[in-house]
Length: 338
Figure 1 (cartoon, one colour):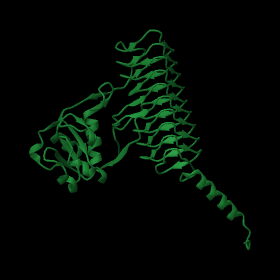
Figure 2 (cartoon, rainbow, N blue to C red; figure 1 turned 180 degrees about the horizontal axis):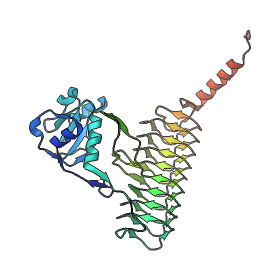
Figure 3 (cartoon, rainbow, N blue to C red; figure 1 turned 90 degrees about the vertical axis):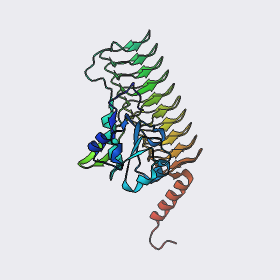
Figure 4 (cartoon, rainbow, N blue to C red; figure 1 turned 30 degrees about the vertical axis):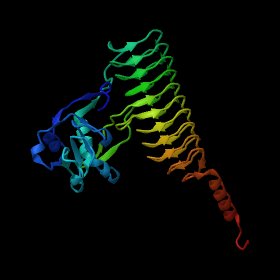
């Protein structure tokens, strides 16, 4: 279930209504009156939620799902348990996206001015001119918030934090002594879309951002909220200016990322990892503890703990340097040289 501090529940709704909304067909029309109140990923599904299966690697999990309903293709109907109603369609992810938008609505600070009456502000908090703090937000003692920053509904910020001017924070839980520089955007929707019958549609992003104690975020950097699970930055990790961290990324403790680094969705980064400037990481990659990624490297596969990689596609640094040396030597040879 999405965090109610950040998302308003709009359900429940019958499976018949969801089928009509999404264009799906109920495998058993007699189950059309069943109610569901939330969308869920497969692992966290419950009897009152609806999930989807569109990737082969999740088909094996379908037989054990506790979901009350599931969007599936015709080929996968038989993989669901008898307790799970099947809504059949060519693109189950489209059904999930439409159902998510029907059942959950993000809480935003639209139209608010100043500090909302339900916000909880501890003593010694300093607020610059033009600051907006949404309903139910919590700000810890000694935190300073710069001019024109917007703190969305339900956001919790710990003590002794420094939030600079023109920062936007939503859908986030932030620890103590966190430093966020000017123009950063925390908790905006992750980049997720799928092809619907009339073109691309957005997939609602129902997760959060969690910044643990001592995290630093540079100017104009972006940390997207999770698609369903959380985006998490571990204690004392430091992010430079203009860095992009996508949805569902997990960053360990004491990591550093230089400017223009880009981390794609669902990447897992261990403790003490270092990134040079303009490094990029493909989605669903795992980078082990204390690994180092060279400047402008493009990481397309898992990096073992403690190794240093560079180049594109990234590979162990010594291998990359040997290859570059050989290429330079061969390119400089004159015709007829041995």
